[in-house]
Amino acid sequence: SSSTSSTTTRSFTPPVQVTGVNDLSLASVYGGSSVTYTSGAAFDATSSDNIAVVGKALAEKNSLSVGSTFTAYGETIRVVGIYDTGTTFANNRVIMPLATLQRLSDQADSITAVTVTV
Image 1 (cartoon, one colour):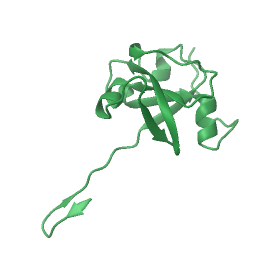
Image 2 (tube, rainbow, N blue to C red; image 1 turned 30 degrees about the horizontal axis):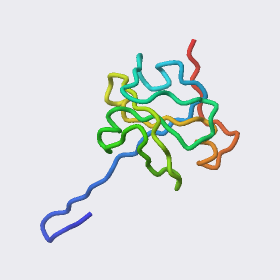
Image 3 (cartoon, rainbow, N blue to C red; image 1 turned 60 degrees about the vertical axis):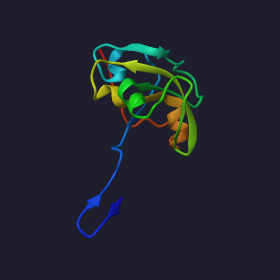
Image 4 (cartoon, rainbow, N blue to C red; image 1 turned 60 degrees about the horizontal axis):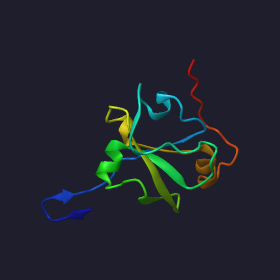
């Protein structure tokens, strides 16, 4: 932030939703009714590696591509895929393997939300 006697300017980034998953087969996991990968691919949901797929809009805003890295929870995360749901809101997410997110957030073996699709 910066200020002068007459104006104040602030820059900020809204919170980014990071979701840990153990199954990437349903579009609802991504927050949309359909999903396609514009580059890269989905990860093995049983992985505990520091990897993620990133929504198209978030990737574009942050100049991320497959192979790029970013920092979350003080660790380096590698982008393995960029997805597109067709909606701006859902394309602003980061999706990681559940085991990875639990480890990075010091919540091993804990789940705070469950989404069931019938």
